[in-house]
Image 1 (cartoon, rainbow, N blue to C red):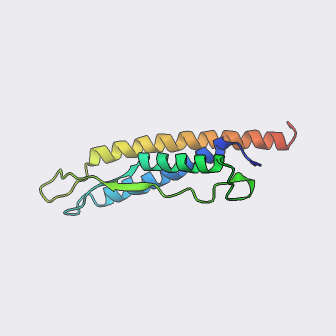
Image 2 (image 1 turned 90 degrees about the horizontal axis):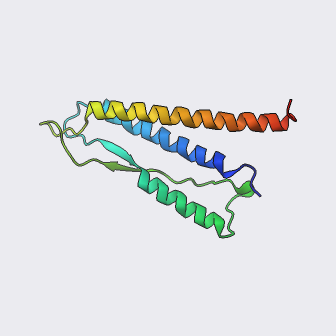
Image 3 (image 1 turned 180 degrees about the horizontal axis):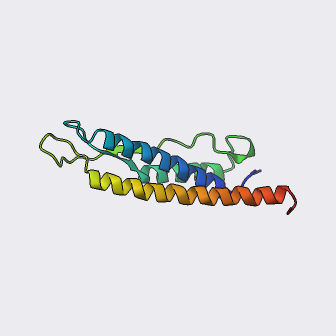
Length: 130
C-alpha cells in the first residue's frame, strides 16, 4: 500500500540531489583560492542508476518498509573534475560555479513549488474540499 503517489518520493529525491549539489558548489567556491584544489561535481548518472535499481527492486514485490516509503535513498556520487585552470593547480572556475549555483537554485525552487502544490491538494482533500 502506498501512502503517497510516486510523485512525492521523486520530488523528495530531486530535493536531496539539489541539496547535495548546492553543498558541493559552495565547497568549490569556498576553495577557489586553495592551491591544488580540484573542483567537484555531483554525478547525475550515479543518482539515476541508483533510483532505477530501487524502482526495480520495489517493483519485484519486495517492500522494504511500511507504506512503501523508501528508507535508503542512497547517496549521490561526487566526482572530481580533473583539470586545472590556474598555475597553482586550482580547478575552480568561478563563472561556471556561479552559473551552476543559479541553475540549481531555479531547479530547487521549481521542486519546492511542485511539492507545495501536492501538499496543498492533499490538505484540500483531507478537509473535504473546504
